[in-house]
Length: 359
Image (cartoon, rainbow, N blue to C red; front, top):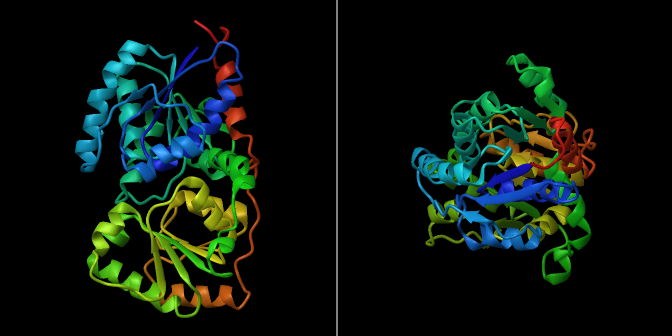
């Protein structure tokens, strides 16, 4: 069987790596990797391929940046001839970025089967572009690979047939487990013994000048009690500008996957608006404070170390103070977050059709 993977943004790279590796061990599985180029910055793209040992993409659509509609349309236009030429038996899409929904729509119109890795997650907030991408992708997919049982329940409530849903666990945790031993303690290289790690990129936080200013001022205040380390996403860096300096915040350029994983592993706490980091901190047992009103990953709250802060920056200060006083949120690792999700996906694909894995 011919499998075509579509990736385009940083989170996709961590998710595709274990699936590719597992499928490479399946006799007769031929794989093609398509990179849409949605993330084109070196630190957000090529570095990840190198660190995660992902083979060079067979095709790079080079769509670059743009608005949601423009970017999605470009991906669809450039991907369609690739699908027609390569004739895959199954296209795997990952997560909830524009590349995900664009590829799913192309395949649905061409009647090519689609597998969605990380299906069923819901924030129920349609103002988030990612939520629209998730819902649409799941509606047209043939196989839905869920990372947690709440994903299964969401899909069943939406009327998805149970035979399409496969609870396989979290592929991002596969990559984390494999790479954890490669982490180096940043505290041996000049980092403080205790620090708070920050990552922000969502429009609701970084495109609203007042909100971004309030967040950064709060982080600067926190930095007077504990150093704040902030690898700055290109979108956030642009909106911050270069005029101000904040003594309590150590601003860094974007870092590679291994470097960021190391920073997470040894952090006293993480402040973020990223979905994937909510999951990684839960696995690592690191307190996570999420600057969002909702999350599509509720298992990180009900079982993990995550606390939703919303836009309440006074609460952010209180939660950081509680962590510094030794009262972090206790958590445990959710079921099937064990480093073998990619293998479960490969097993489902291997048995999906009665014919052997070749054509």
